[in-house]
Length: 160
Image 1 (cartoon, rainbow, N blue to C red):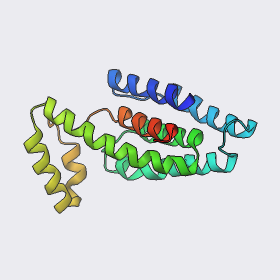
Image 2 (image 1 turned 90 degrees about the vertical axis):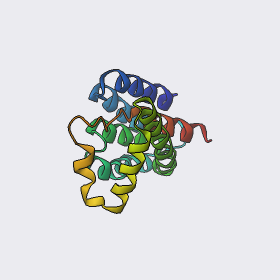
Image 3 (image 1 turned 180 degrees about the vertical axis):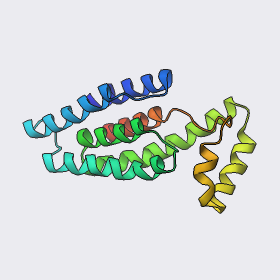
Image 4 (image 1 turned 135 degrees about the vertical axis):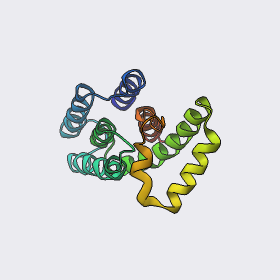
């Protein structure tokens, strides 16, 4: 319930404001750690702490190149506290798939699918240009990633 409520709220806020505030992520970390200390659920305190670290580490490369924001990074770390170390890895895989689908949906909506696919292929061929291409002014390359994180974490929490 904590994952679904927290991730759902973060996704809704991100869609509306393009931000995931600390007012969402901090309570999620505290809830995850509190539940683990209280022995509620199957996530131990150690697993919750490792989950936070893994969430940060998994999102750090995307944040470093400007593909994701700090709120996205903090949201996956917070989800790591709730889901634990093993499930945050599962959530990350689901999140990457959901993020790819979301990127395609946004490209279609913006009528830029062909160009987006060509640019994505060129970024794979020349990764050093990735950061500049993502941050290019007026290119509308970015989209809210909170819904992808929410979907990945929800699927992991539900054991799907």
